[in-house]
Image (cartoon, rainbow, N blue to C red; front, side, top):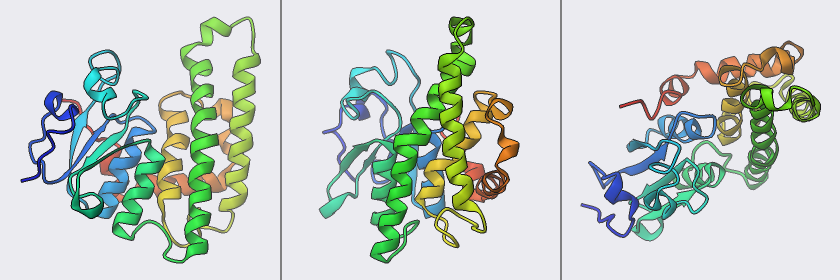
Length: 235
């Protein structure tokens, strides 16, 4: 049996099966990426629901695994050289899982680097901009009622990013063409989330991006997505 005692987080959220990958997350646009990838890869994992706030992501135990205090994070008892490894940042973990299994990323070097470029596009662009759009569109709308600039700025930047995806996805099934990859997994939960979590479909003009919408439907319809979007479940 694997010994995960070196990771303080396992004292607050004990592993029932320390021999399988431990997932610490919430079903948010960032959080569901890993559950979806793990379901696609068929890897055994144990999900732990980490709530927002001082008893969850801001607790010393969680901070010991992710100093940034954000979900998701993992512990893989079967890491490099057979040693346990703890990781945070969804993009880094997706790359790790893809390389660990040789799946969800092209085998050829050129395809691999192009996939990574689109993963970084989400991490540096889609995630931050859509997140800020959602904040001002829904959660802080009352605070900027007399100043439309913040909401308009992030709306317009989110639409610009959608236009890039629209161009990329014309005549393509997936971001990388015929192969479903971590580029799709890291991106589609944010496009979905802007509608589901933030109610931003009309404000962002989703109808203007038919290729993106068709791709989003394909992503969500995958069995691994249907399951992963609900993980970790409420207790």
